[in-house]
Image (cartoon, rainbow, N blue to C red):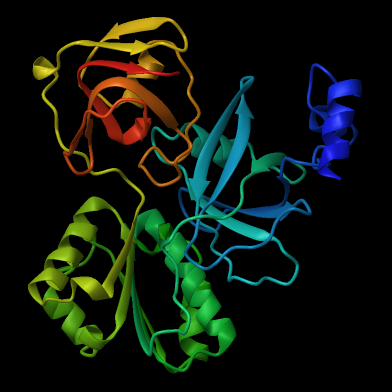
Amino acid sequence: MVGLIDLVQRTMTTPHPLDRYLELVRPTLALRAMRAEITHVRRSAVGSITLTLKPSRQWTGHVAGQYVQIGVVIDGVRHNRCYSPVNAEGRRDRHIELTIKAHPEGLVSNYLHDNAIPGMVVDLEPAGGVFHLPEPRPEQIVLISGGSGITPVLSMLRTLANEGYQGRILFLHYNRSPEWVPHREELEAIAMQHNNVRIEFRYPETQRHPHFSYDELEALAPWFATARTYLCGPPGLMAAVRTVYEAEQLADRLHSEEFTLATTVIDPTEAEGKTTFSGSGVVSENTGESLLEQAESAGLSPDYGCRMGICFTCTAVKRSGCTRNLRTGELDSDPDQPIQLCISAPVGDVDIAI
């Protein structure tokens, strides 16, 4: 079948792939590419939008905690971003539910928040990521999130509730105020329906002593040392939780997912050399920023998804030179190596094959 598709593309549909013609008949009709149609749009929390997607036949589902990459066309340019489904895994109708927060500088999130309507079609990639619940399930689970980091752990909670999980669960979420918490009513309903689930909200802008601490965790889940903890949120919350778990020698019980990139700071005045994008014939002065940012500043448009080193969409070959990993600070001077543009910065002269 694959060979027949290739033959048809070579002999009958050149210069465009077959899917380009099929999408003219129906936007979600494709033999190779996977797409999804938005069927419902809901705004249940300040600053967020919840989209229900009906994926094409290639969709095989996700594991609670994983992310998907969607692509939208804005002003004629396709942009890809990664979002974690909030629905439980194994949904019978195969639909996907995404809750997307409109970030101040988020091109795609703001576009979807303002323009998403039923009938809109987006590109879709298979689910990925290693942040998910294990099999068999742990006997006790702590779920900690902040802001839009709620999405993967909400999928975990929904999945556990659907499975009739009997172990103890603490769901601890930090946000600005109750109005900013997506799916808050559903969370409260889960707590009412399941005696083993404790739901706690913290609002740093309105409450006294709202920040994460050992005493707070001990009061809410005195059994946390024997539990598995899953964490997703802004850098301050992530650091606070990690500090507690490391101090208690429980780092191996803490599993986390980044949704913002915490980078090593590079002084622009110390940046040296030139960045050569040899695939495009473009040369620019090294600014110390990530290679993705430098490529964009030079007028290039490399593919990317998460911008934080998770999805590997922006991977390109470094032909020569030395780069620094912005997450770890590690240097890499091996030639002809694939690197992630969003978390790599040049150290001196670098040649990238884009």
